[in-house]
Image 1 (cartoon, rainbow, N blue to C red):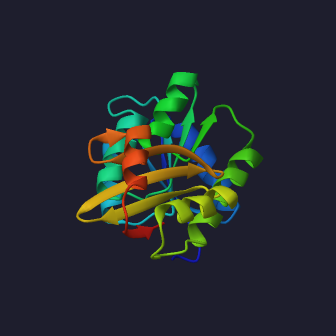
Image 2 (spheres, rainbow, N blue to C red; image 1 turned 90 degrees about the horizontal axis):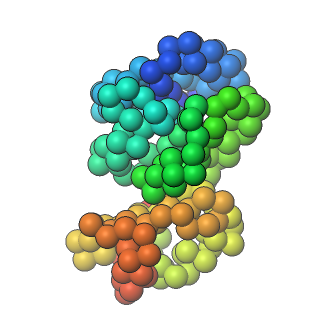
Length: 195
């Protein structure tokens, strides 16, 4: 882990990137910017980031497609979505793709800093690999109101359960998603769980 938390900020609005970068760096974060989804994927391939913050509606590759491609490269990458044109549909799509937070522009900078800090705090208190039942582990995360991605590996299958403040917001296993994926993951008798 780096001394300063590393954030990749992805937005096709250069002014937004400059302003937000200055604020975040003044608060102790190390920020790299990418002005497109393809630039962001290149950055993610070359370096590790504690958090990716991406715009929802960019030209070319939008934020949802970027999240999907990040999930292929780095399945447990922490991701936050910001949007200048927020809708309930966009928010649902962001959470389904694997975003932990969805923030509407314009936003209060203190709110953004608070969300970033909470996400990074959860990331740094990762519990690593454990060997217990899926139900027991999920109960711990729900009761602890954790925001994280739980990766479940069993018999060559790998699934993910996404938690936000202790609530399960999405699950995926192979081509299954949502409740079907969650039900299948819960039926796994034994596995290795990573956060």
